[in-house]
Image (cartoon, rainbow, N blue to C red; front, side, top):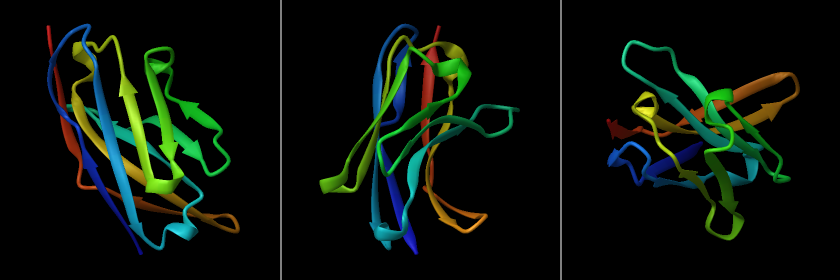
Length: 119
């Protein structure tokens, strides 16, 4: 099992910045990638950013150029630096860890942290 604990959400004005952190514990050796998804009011959960064990990254189209994902392997922690925030970025942000076994993907989720961007 993998446990994920997020921190860093809050309220910020449009144009501002926030940094989210996600610390992993448990069977971390089994994690192939970590990242963030978000779910806004009345919307489906969507990919924000992922980073693989090798360091390759993948971003959702709506955050490219504004958000940066990084990881500290020594601390088993992933960070999401969010800049130029917009009201549309308002959502619950969920940390995600992926474990790939053959063709199957196993997802682990954090409890979520609220990000609210005021106009």
